[in-house]
Image (cartoon, rainbow, N blue to C red; front, top):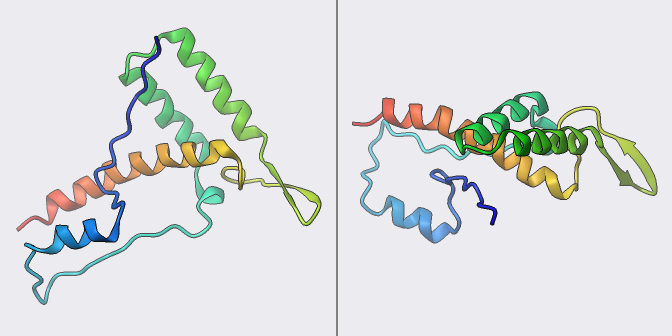
Length: 130
């Protein structure tokens, strides 16, 4: 039986009501800043090589068997090298990032974004606590 490796979503907000609940007991002082992060052209801005490295580390951390790691990383290469999509009845080759509209692009982008959030936002929130 296979086991799924979970990605934690510490910084994700699923519903606007959840965000409001988080702010109920938070004092808003004049020197506080509220930031919302969004990514323009998400898929074309995901660094593929860096994401592959992150993916490999996740596989190792989750004690994935070496042969399975190799197969998954080979899958990653095949998927990310088939970087084209249809636009107005023409095939367009996308030279950077992930293929727009590919089902795998969302999962691969999520791996990169979760890593980025935990690497940078965790540090930021710990360094700015009162």
